[in-house]
Image (cartoon, rainbow, N blue to C red; front, side, top):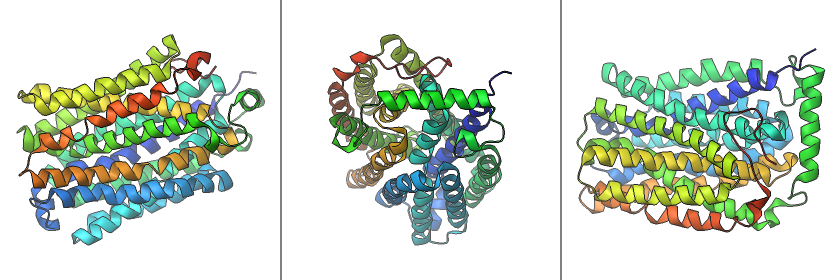
Length: 426
């Protein structure tokens, strides 16, 4: 009898689509706010601060609820948590399409944040319960790829959909994806643990349980991960990641149109290209970390590259080069997310993974406020988006310093390839 591969054929695809569609739901607003009819309907013409608040409203509940969901997922399991979250965010997207005022739109964004707050704790709980330590790199890369492939494919679709119909329809389309794709996948393909799943045979169950037992013996934060400085250094790096992710991803479409003069179709293509660059960056990052076993060092180097990419984008006059450098900055942030989540799983016991990821998820609040701050800078400088981008330059270098504090500990070696089934923590 061969070992079944339920974790790869059932659990991994569900996690992938949760992140692909979930992240498109999150960042799709960045495209919608470039539509003139939308801006007029919401009274947002020339009000970049108000536009930025649309992401801030989302991240406040996204961050706060992440800690709440972390405790919930450890009690009721990742499957039921995912079902509840999906129902909440589907309703919120329908509300967005029906919004008749700026206030009602903000309310829908806040509710979306509450629903999507499940993502980090739910995902890490699934991975901790279902995958052998040797497979953690590949398992984590499943959702990271989904996070970036969703916008890469979905943003051009949203641009096209808005062009042939209306901005309201784009909200309803996003709600439909969650309702008719994600929800059935979670209900029919997932279970909280391998022992509960109808497709897991005894060999796969034994393999997974043996891996969890071995990791419990090796984990370095058995008693309280909150007392380990390494956890907080990873959190500091993650804070910088959230600032950069929301600042770049939210304002990129508007920046390409308003500051660099690209048409809506060109903007959609360049934005999609940036998300594809992010996928490639995660792919390469996994290989390099596997070869060097120095994730913190690689993460620090990538942070530095990100900082210089943003600086170049802000100062260079060539629009195409600026767009490519901004895409490179987003790609750097993407690879950093892989590094940070791998380290969180490394530094927590499987029973506490949901809480560890949930507490860290609170930091998304800060990233959301950055979009409003950047909008205020644009308003205050008469529409200068380059100055708003310069606001982000310092954060990658702070992230590099936070990873520097982990250099000594990583000599043990952490292996994480998104490409092979033999990768994982060692």
